[in-house]
Each structure stands twice: as C-alpha cells, then as structure tokens.
Image 1: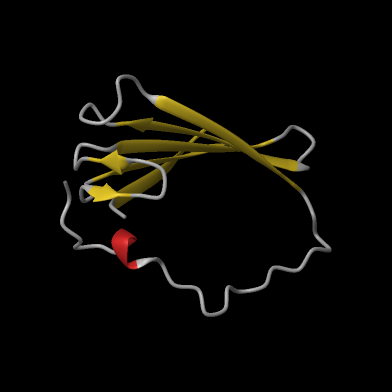
Image 2: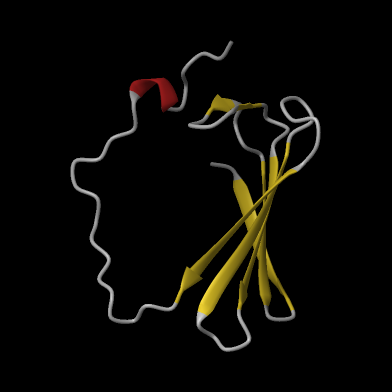
Length: 98
C-alpha cells in the first residue's frame, strides 16, 4: 500500500509506512498524506503479540487514530489460505476518488 521501513527499538518492531496512494478503504477515505506507524511487541511471557497502530492523515483525520490489537500464542492452530477471495471493484487501486 505504500513504502514501509522497519526497525527495532529494543524488543519492539516499528514499521513506518508513507507514500500511500490516496484511496477509499474499507473504513475511511484517505489522502496521499497518510502515515502509519505500527509497533509490534511480544509480552514478557512470550504468549502474546501486541500491536499498536497509529494512523495520521491531516486531510481526513482531525487527530491521529490509534488501534490496539493482541494475538495469543496458538502453536497448534492451523492457518488456511483464502480461497476465491477478491476485493470489491470499488476498492481496487486506480478507482477515481471524490
């Protein structure tokens, strides 16, 4: 979706994304000024992966939005690929924007 660069700050993986083409996403319309910072950290016991994502876009957001998510360690779970999954045409790159 853009240009992403990752680095570690201690034990936290930090991914900065910019250079995203203006678009309509599944939850908001954003400009090419969109910037996203993702921070991934494992819990002290190693049983959770915690993410804090900060989204900034001066064109579409009054202030930064922060989303938090956590995943539990599940080594016995199986991950299956999506089959016949396609994005709706209105979300495809190159669609004219309002």
